[in-house]
Image (cartoon, rainbow, N blue to C red):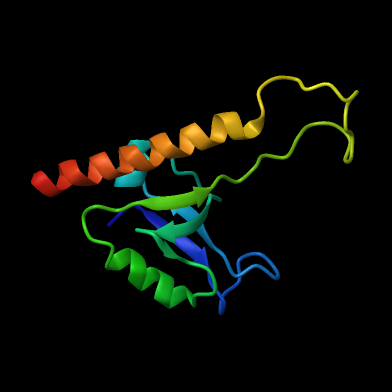
Length: 124
């Protein structure tokens, strides 16, 4: 397998009013663990280009089981809560890079590494 468990779906919502699929557990020693980029709590948006929106849990599980050796995941990183009071907006100045400037390239690297790892495993 890919080395992680999922939760969610239209029939088993993990988050109230959200039928998305989420990573619930990364298995030690599995492909996702060894790659290191997928994290517990990440939302999986698509597998091999197939959208996971509005799927039952078991249908999502089947997509993963039938994904083959070359697997591409589109994910949305779980955002960590910010420290400080709720609603604090600061003084209007940016404190660094926009979040997308870090997450988008990181996600692209993560997907590429999983693909390479799975290709390597296929040849063994």
